[in-house]
Image (cartoon, rainbow, N blue to C red; front, top):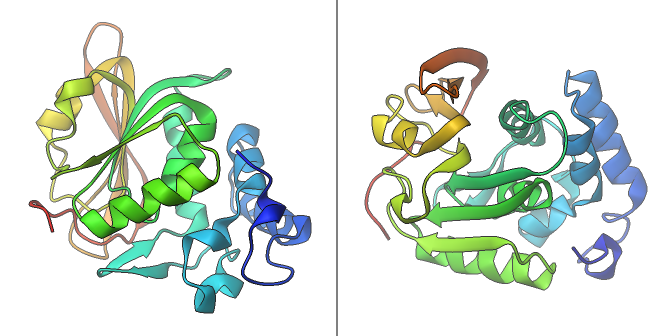
Length: 227
């Protein structure tokens, strides 16, 4: 990824200080995985929102609009979801990961630094195209973008070592679970709009499925179809 100092719409926003403060705040909120904290500490989060909102990009518990009735998730939630997925592999890079809901591309960019290959699918064409250009400009090359209904995952490239869903589902989709590799982990918000439980669903080497609740979260709903 290219240096975060080279492209900014506002003074001071890319300073190491603003990112370091965010990392310390995430630590104080319980994020422990140093791999995740290091990536968030380097990534220019303000470049994933409109200029008028950039000054608020480094607050750990703030959700920001990105247009099309979609949002940039709280940095804390991005960190928690990524940490939960990576916990299946204590060291080294994760393998193949599917992200359902590209959105701004911020979570995608975090995953791209920590995984060999990221497959990300988005149902809103404008968001998918903007994210593709944004990550390309950052020099991130290990991401495959798909414009499609992601409710049934992306079976063409399954199985995945990790699946991360960035919108609230009514329930855990058996189709997504079926796309997990042995040892794979699915992180997904489940419940009504704005009041979901973040769940971790894991498949062990023998194929047995386990589920646990991680945290209360608030996501836009996971919708079918394309626009």
